[in-house]
Length: 306
Image (cartoon, rainbow, N blue to C red):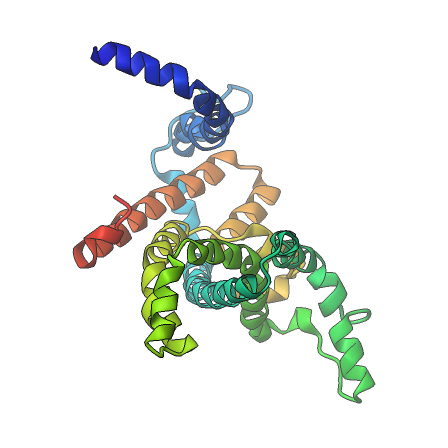
């Protein structure tokens, strides 16, 4: 009887499995398939011999990341930037999600469902051109505005001190649309009767947000933070390489592990070292996810991912 039940369930749900199949294939090809090449991190690749015949070198490739004086600098930048991005990104995303959900309640139309995608699309479009259009010394909009006000122009690409603020702003703006949509979707799922009861009891809008919206957003916030912590040793390559335009003067405040490895590869063409860096980042990210989830499970078991 149990076998028949399972067989009937599979027959009824086969369209769902077919729909899931492309996503599973993509996940396997892009996330699990490359794991077969982890052995490259422990070899010195000799292209004349091929990958399998190249000599094993143990942890020599991993040592390369820490031989240079830039190791501490790039690790510091990677971690500190990601910490700031996580905190400010979550705060601004929640705020934007709450504002959009309030607008949606007042403007309940199909047109709003289309308009809501604009923050996400515009954030990416503006970030794609911000380096050239906004910060260029000769043609940048900001320097053009400063000149019109009689203020001396700023040479952005020769002033490392300003770039932590620039990169933080750009990153928050780039991710704000996506974060707003995620949090707005979570807020829409909250039972509206809770807000109606609060209004009957005389709760102000701020109290509704504080005592209903924010507590019920807690699982979403924790899940997104844990996922972000897992990628703390990674950085947005486009953000840290393209927007500073690979300016050597800015390396002290814009260089991260990813950009450092890319520049090293451009000069050395060493895929083994690149594999070692990726392996190192993955292992540390995995440990960070387990640690963050362990802390959450100890303090709030119902909100842990596993």
